[in-house]
Length: 72
Image (cartoon, rainbow, N blue to C red; front, top):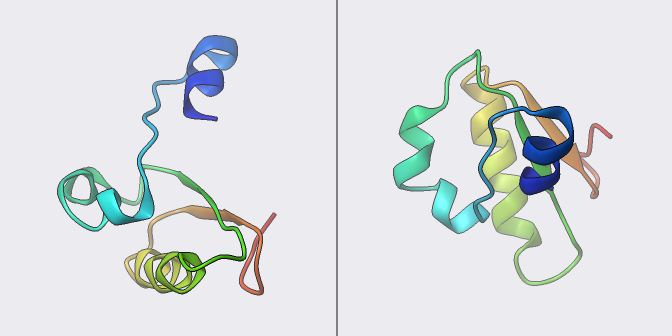
């Protein structure tokens, strides 16, 4: 999805997993950095939900696709 946003809409974007976002790239997020997260019903769902809650608490603009806390 990040690649398509870059190619079609010419928006700067990077694609990272929820696990990767817990560390390095997370420091680059701010209230001006929108995040699109994809959630599927597998063993990663709990971690994605927890990360989504943390980002929302930090006022990061978040669009979550899938799951009970989804916004899309």
